[in-house]
Image (cartoon, rainbow, N blue to C red):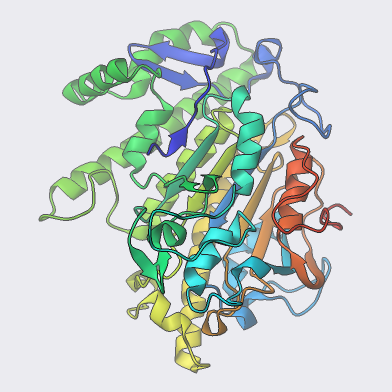
Length: 459
């Protein structure tokens, strides 16, 4: 199943793209071309119909809960001190809200017994009770990202983008009688159709920069590899012609964008050749050996996809829930899942916090990229809503209440960041999704187990 989905015909406006032999590169927002793009700056509630710079939504999932004592701020409001697990985000404290009290009641055991990791990931974006089965009769719910994609998808080349660092599994028993499809996928197109994430940055990059003709893109890819050329080499003439139509500011912006694409492509190619020199491995070519490098390549792809309005909806599974990968990069040799069952052991809790902090470092990289990407009078981050967090709170108790959740970005001026907001106990996380849908112009009376839109997101 393709990780980047679009089942609708899409008409390509001539000057929204650079074109070459078998290559199609979306352009970032350029003020000189605003009438052609059909975009203008603004903060209206419906970016679909009012012609404003589009708002993007992304959902970043980290596994196995958190050491909540090191995640949760001690005070509320703007004057809170950033907790230890989130200190890598210090430079962006004014760009996100920490949301305490959100809950997924659908993830709790109730009569289904064990299987909290499967329920944690499968309910995170669906807010729905999943069917306990390890057969083909899986059932979850349509995820929030796909509800948005169904409404916004006709406006972009791809309705949504699904990325991850763990190759997805769709069958087998992964958690106490629950199908692996639940543990490895957070995006669900229908109740029975998960959207597996693409884990190979090379393949994700190729999909973003091809013309949409499968036979043509294969030929173009072969030609690039034969002559060791970049996708930029195939659109260079088109880019030169476009430069002549742009003002000085947009010329610089286009140069910066093309440089970013070239740099990303170079890093993917480096990772590809590094893997070719290794002994036999299960990892496909193009995936870096180091987790942080892998994650950052995926974050870069998401930034480019948003910057060029190739999609407005993205999900990223950092690792699947129940993952037992160690993190030697930060001195943690024990498996993550094993550590998550800490039993209040101080050493295990300390190592769990190291992993939480390491994941936050990668997220900080993503926020920095979004913040540095200028758009209109603000940044890409200003026009985005990025949910970051896990489907479990204290993993030792498999707690589905009071989840570790962070919301970054300003949603095109509709969100006031920089705060720790504590909501009433057991507030449905679905209320957050309903509020985000409203901010991108998607009208929904309810979602999952929602009880209403989440208040206090704007001051």
